Structures are given as structure tokens and as C-alpha cells.
Length: 184
Image (tube, rainbow, N blue to C red; front, side, top):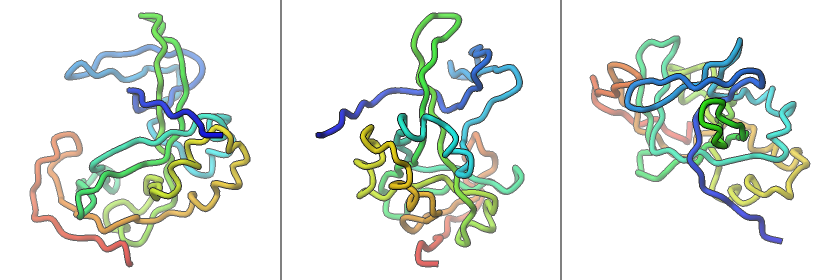
């Protein structure tokens, strides 16, 4: 039986269950103001406790991501060969208290840091799915998450072009790019 896959816009956030209150940001974006808790990522050691890991997995597509160590020296990281990135995530559905609309929020799963990125972000790395895992990752029939454990091993799926940028949000390059090898 082939599962149904849906593409949908979602907010990159993982709200707590109590109070979801969208707050305006620049450029028409919003962040979710929650009583006591707000996150954009989910750590690998906590993901097994979330029912969404069994029933609501998603792929968060990206062309690059930005990492920094303690907010210093942010680097824009992108596949050296120009391919897209498929981050593994989980999602939840909730109702916007202001508009009444159904909203999807997604959270990228983060794994332990890896050697090629240790000078940029030693603490963690986003879960990067290999292409051959997409169908299994998205399948609602896969509820025994032991079948997905191999994906919780941190890996760099291809060489990355790393560019030091001035600030995480502006992404203005301040150095020449260099290559981080996936073979390390």
C-alpha cells in the first residue's frame, strides 16, 4: 500500500501544548508565543517520546542552513554540488487562536555534532535524510520507530560549501567559501 504524501507550508517552530499566540515579526513572518516553552528543533534523545515521531514525520527541504558556535562566527552551509537538503522533522497541527485556521508547525530533529562541523557548531547537526530513506521516513505505516534508528546516526550526506557570514539573519559573506568534506 502506497502512502499519501502532502506538501504544505508550515511554521518552523515546536510549540508547547498550552497557549499558542502568534506574534508578528518583520516581513510578515510570525513566531509563536507560548507560555513557558518554544523551540524550533527537537533533540534526537527526546524524539522517541513524542507521538509525532511515530505518526507525523516530515521532510523540511532547504538549499542551505546557518550554524554558529554560541552565536559567534555564523557560517552559511550549502551542498557543494548545489543539490537540495532534506532534513528529517516532525510536525503537529494546531488551531490559531486568532484566525481559527488550522496551522502546521514543523521541528527539525537534531543529532549529536560531527567532526567536519566541530569548529562551526560542535553541539549538534540537523538530521539529514539520504534520498533512499524518504519513502520510509514519510510512510504512516512505519510506526515501529526502531526501523528508523539508523537515521539517528549523524552524517554529512555530501561535501558542504561553508561561508563565514556577518550575521545569521543577513547572511552577508565576510570571507571566501571553503569546502567541508563528507569523507572526514
